[in-house]
Length: 376
Image 1 (cartoon, one colour):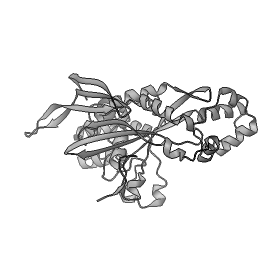
Image 2 (spheres, one colour):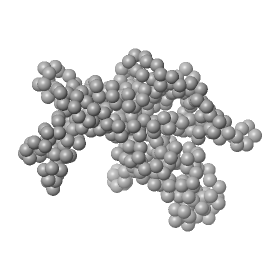
Image 3 (spheres, helix red, strand yellow):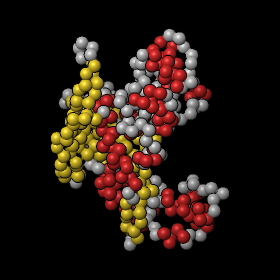
Image 4 (cartoon, helix red, strand yellow):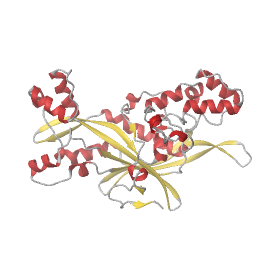
C-alpha cells in the first residue's frame, strides 16, 4: 500500500532509441513483514520503473500502421448497399440476420475503427536483481487491417501485415522482487494509462481523417504472470485462473469442458462476496489466507456457508468456495470495488494458455531481442 510519508525522489523525461521514457524513482509503498522475533513491522520499499506511456505507444503504433489500415469516411458506410454490408459482415463472421441495415452499417463502422491491444508481462532475475517487463502490441484484425493480398494490390509490395502490426513495444521496465506485494506497486501507474484509453486518436489516410478507438483486450504470459494478473493462487490444487478446476480432475476432459470460464468480473465478485473481501482486500495481497478460526466463521457466514466445526474443516470449505482466488485482479488492487468499465477493461481477458511454454516447451522472448531457447 502507499506510504503516507512517501516522497517522489526523481521524475524526468528522456529520449532513447526513438522511445520517450518517463523515469520514476519513488519511496511510496510499504509492506508488512515479520522480523526475527516474530513481530509484525512496516517496511518501505522503492519502486523503480522506466515507462513509455501507453498513450505514446498508441500514437506511435497508429502512425506506423496507418498504411495497413482500412480508413474510410462516414459517407462510405452511409452509402454502402445492403448486399455489400452483408457480404462484409459475413466475411468477418459478424453477420446477424435479425439486424437492420442501419444497425449493420454502424456495427461495421465501429469494427473497422477499433484496434485491440494486448499486454505481455514477465518477471525474471538478471544480475542478481529482479526485473519486471511489460510490453504492448496491437492485434492484427482483418476488420481493421488489410490482408497481405489487399496490401500488395494497393501498393505492389509483398509484406506480412500481421507480423508488422503485432510487433510489440516496450511499455514498462522496472526493478522489483518477485513477490505479489512489490509487483502490485506498478498497478497505480498502469491504471492511470488505462483511464486514458477513453481518448480516441485520429488517423489520416488518402485525405480521410477518422477517430480510432483502442480497447485493451488480452493479456498473455506464463502461468505465474497469468495468476498474478487474475488474483489466482500460484500452484496448489486450484492453479488454473480460467476455470477453477481442481488439479485432481484436469485430465477428465468431460469435466473440464463443463467448467465455466472465469472472467475478471467473476474474480472480483468472488472476493467481494465475503465480509473480509469487502473490507480489507486493498490492504493485503492475500487477504483471505491464514485467517483465524473466528474470522473463518465470519467470512464463511457472510457467504452463507455454515458447515464445519474445526479450523481445518472451515479452511477447506473456504478453499472450495474460492477455488484458488486470493484477491481481486491486479488492475483492481488499488480500488477493489471499481467498475471494470470505468478503467476500460470490461472486455479484458487473461489468456490461460501460453503456447511457447505449454505446448512447445520453450521460453518466449519478445520480438527482436533473441530467438526462443529450450527450457533447461
